[in-house]
Length: 416
Ligand code: COA
Image (cartoon, rainbow, N blue to C red):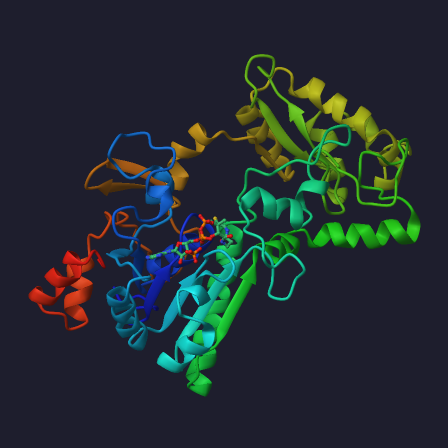
């Protein structure tokens, strides 16, 4: 099957999560992604949190599938020479080093553009160029704090809270992938490459868009009616943490189901969609609420929304989260069980759709990973194992025109 990005050659100068998530996505869609790694050690995640001694850690294998690995010391003159050759024939270079690292290596944007004016140079940094923090190195949780996610996540009586979702890392990688694809389309029109930069702070903030909406609403009217603080609590001058409240116009909350006393995930998320009020009353056996003025409208319900949630929890007390959702779905109520990673890993629908995939690996045996969340009618992205360190060094160098003797010499000086 021909893949849309076949023929696009990408130098993958990325590490940890943000950059690798971007290039992995492009590799699934057919790009030839060559991961450039330091000889002997490679991407630091190969060694981080290993569960099998001497085998690449899941952190690495789950973010580097479908790629090739070339070991190259790009600080050595011999390594720089190889990299220059690769740059001349590649379409994209993606990097997420600390600020200034690529410049220090001798590959500034100007130099890269000189070597290959058609190449797209894509970077992830913690903060955008020119930002007063643009010298900072940044990891996931730092970005969640800098991008507004932490101050608005969690409960009002607790500290700012980090989300388990990789809003700073993988999310930024996804933004970068969109930027790269846009620049590739732009190049088709202009014949020129360009620099694409995405900061982790900006990407987090982009996902916190509705919280900036709330800040402006708060400043105008002094309260936020969908937050648990309304109407009995107090509002200050910044968007508060809203616990599990729904972020749109429909109130929602995480509700206990049968077994919650012993199972910390025996919960569902329940949404009170305005026009679904009547079906909700039917579903939970509270027909009398349908026309009761204290319950009939969203406005009337808001002051005692937690009393309503408590009543729904009484109804849920003898139902598992799965039984509850099976009943509520018949009433068209937006809801879902709170699913654990164990449940997701074994979910037959996710296996069938290719969202959870089992990948054979030379050293690990097989491992589970998340496949492409993007589905196409004419293509099924296939996930293949992440490369061993330097697995494709000979192949890539031979492709660049190096002879066996020259490759041997590069090995002798530890440039590859
Ligand atoms: N050969 C030789 N040197 C190499 C190399 C190679 N193949 N690959 C990388 N290096 C060098 C770089 O040139 C740099 O050297 P220098 O600092 O002496 O100039 C060094 O290795 C890498 O530095 P850095 O990227 O700063 O690594 P770090 O471990 O200190 O910091 C991060 C890690 C993630 C904090 C940092 O890279 C960063 O802030 N990145 C941008 C934001 C980001 O993507 N963060 C999310 C990561 S999930």
